[in-house]
Image (tube, rainbow, N blue to C red; front, side, top):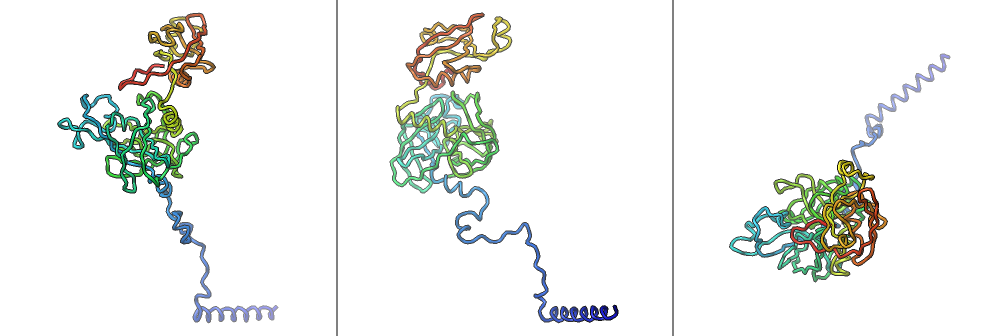
Length: 389
């Protein structure tokens, strides 16, 4: 036992001597390798750094989309209405100011647009170019060119322009149907004519309607800052794909309050295809004005139903009038599509082809009727359209 203890003591003495010598002559040999700081990351290889992966955020999305977003200057004659009119021009351009309008000189309105085709087709808002005698487009690369109007659809506030330039940057179209509340989006445009600007936010809501902005509403709501001049610009996803056309803001003072609205690219593309193909967007119309069916009305008239759309007025000589519909009738179905709200009725009727035949189901008192009618082309709205189905 004593011998073992002596061996242990001698080994310990030798080991300590070795450690002392190494600590004196080669201290680096005794340094322990520490675990890396979780907050530290090694530098990226040059190839990855050059690709943009070294920078968190949405720089890559902005670089992809921004070249295809343009600034639009639309000149038109001075408006005859007073400032504050319901004219859509005032939604973003305001009353005549330093940019024109005094002494009968033409006004200039500023907006944005998005190049969606290498052939030179642009998407923007109808109200940006409404009534314009001259439209000038400025690209982010410094080129400027005059644009012609291919067509407009005031009821969705979409317009298609055409420019003649080569080597145009084109934005990639995204999938607005795949958007979810909380997804990151970027708004790109030319607010207040300060130059191209990118703001970020999230999708705050989807399918916003009954806002009184357009006749046909299905807006993407976002808190990305949208200001006057952004109108007609791009709303893109985190990959730089176009998901919407910025169109309006909710504001009492003219500035962004974190509530902006964009037309889904699905709607804008459908309108563009119709304008390019037919020169107009053909929608069905039967000529009725409607209201929600309230429980009080159903009870007062002892109706055996609780859902439907109440007809408040029938336009003389319209398809509904010729088919025999009357004020007080409740529309239940258009073709094979049930309708329970005025918005659903508007969508169902507008989807019908002009000159086509359809059957509507109607509750009239205690009787349920089916009436056949011939759909007509929806009249093009005037400056202050009456919303009829």
